[in-house]
Length: 347
Image 1: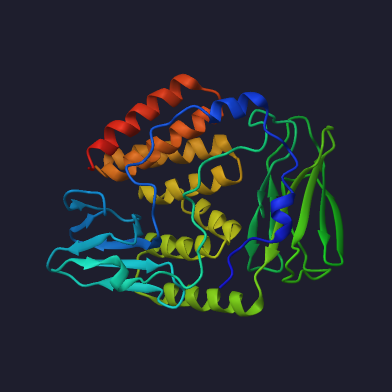
Image 2: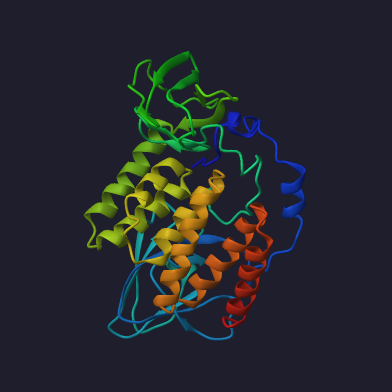
């Protein structure tokens, strides 16, 4: 299945990073122990103790709900334990890992026939992260959609009372003026699954340029496949948090970033570090850096409480990246050091 985002997405980033941001990005941040991963799925449910051995780890280590799984990883639930993985390949969906033995993840979740979207790319800003005089679009932004009546949402601008919202493309030229920071697209004119996608702009009445974002709708056959997989997840014997992670994995893999973001935002009361970490990843992708920091910090806090070493390392690594983008060098250096220290414990 094609998970490539609409062509227009790659030409709609009209706000350019300042020289200071570019300079900050050139400074080194401690990198993860391994950043080469053929993503095969995510561990969404654990009952009992489950151990994981990464390809570059010397030993098995206890793992936790939300761990991303790569080709070459080994899972070993203790006898009587139960582990469930949401596979990245839509034809497989959920895999119940055999207990009492070691299983290669690739035996239960084979590599997808088509590349899947992941959140592992570096954080590289294309705009000034300090500019708050324009309404940054939260969703839909660089995403596919399932809904033909999507919620359009953006950040508030200090001093603004009204916003002009436009959706254009494929015969659609829809305009509304609202005094809120969100509106549901009414479905008329109808949106269509076209390769060129749609351009969303939001302009505040306080002045400044409008912000732009692009999105597209999945083709009907692909949307039907995703909806069928989502139905299997909701009907499975999963806790609410396991269901959330499984659906988020499904949506992210298909490039349904807006769907995954809304799902994870509704679960911010979760005590699972991966819920907050994934939300931070999605915020960082659409350059909502303050929101990303808050999510990564919550993931770090919960990982420390849960003694989840790998989740601590991942959150520290991303916090170093984001603080570097924000020009907060002391915090970037602190989290970079924490990342190195914690990652060294995993080797």
